[in-house]
Length: 325
Image (tube, helix red, strand yellow):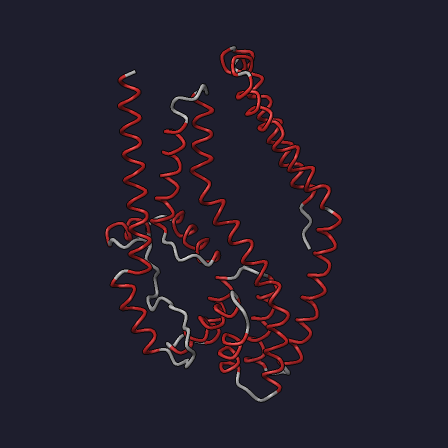
């Protein structure tokens, strides 16, 4: 009992330290002295006269950590580069170090909270791994919602650019106008592209950077049309008008498919979550009855078989209801 208590105290202390460290890193990256100095310099150097300007990094390589030693270590692994790319696409200001701190804190917190629960070690580890992956799931959800909003704004942006080009504006000025007139989050991406061009980045590279931050096929069509027009000529306003019509037609088809597949998606959610809900309910109502599954060897085998069948069923249902358009 003493060993369990001391272990609980050590894990709780580590979780609190990681939480405090994560909060400090977040506050310092957003409101620290270095961030404020960079914001002031960018505000002075920015060519746009708007009242609210986006703060972008003037460095070629993004920093993964405030500490130089950690930043060099994190840059050596592709895994952390993928995390950084995910954070950029989600539009989050958190760094890779903060993301890793949140994940580790969730893993330790799950182990601490389930220390006294009547659960097998394997179930505790699975639950802790779920909390470890929870920040990634939340970031991916934020990324998906942001991309959906941007995709819905693309037809209006294409029409806006086409009208501005017909009025005689240059494309670089159109980027600034779109960044000031359209709502977020698409306007912020156009402002970032405009500011990159002001800092000397070529137009094609700035547009490719925007496509990397927004991995949407429709946006890539728009960017490819702009680049080809600048190299070979043509009526860019007419091309953008046609692209906006195509995007609207595709979004309409996507909405129809979502309506028709709503029943299948709901069935997948219910069938996928029902075994776990029943397991948790039986653990709360009669833990001795359900504990046979992980105390008896036959019950452990049944759990493995059930887990494999659930995974196969969820993957199969996902393949059925996922329709690419």
